[in-house]
Image (cartoon, rainbow, N blue to C red; front, side, top):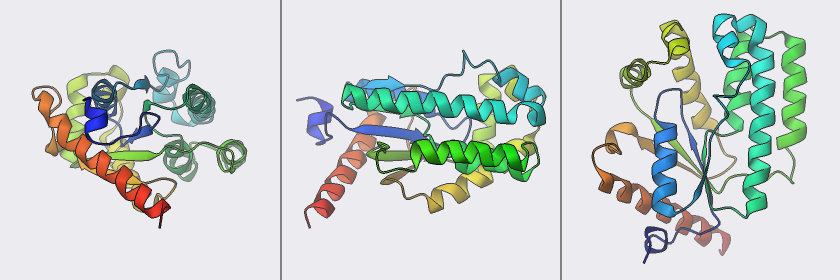
Length: 223
């Protein structure tokens, strides 16, 4: 019996991993996909023509970056459901507008006109009954110190040059966002509760929680 079957996780499930920069979304995405024999969907960072420019000049490139991410994530979401599910997805489409674009607008890195144009695009793409939402969102959280340590340890130059105040603000906004999020069921997992690098078996308690979440959703649907 596979781990997916053991914990009664549907074979066509779509699970999205969310959390602030450096929290370990990509690592969790790979580990869950391996354990469940699911496909993965990662955000397009390496081929993003705006990312390096954005970190050098937020005000000049924030709108371009957000539109690029929105288009890429929308295409990814369509592909996932065309395949019929069975995916673990690195970062959700909701974070783009509700955290990143909103923050840049409020900090005047994005003009009000550009923000409204971006939000109109988002609403037309996502805020419709036809948009396929994930079955479950797993939110990874931890202390700010732990997350800053992870950002520093992975050594991406563009992140190393970013002021700590930016990461502090991102951390706060993520906390506010997840407290209000209701587009799909959510599991919150602290990054101190598992170690996917040195303990392969630490994935099983997470799978058990995921299975219980699907069980609760099914009970709700049938009541």
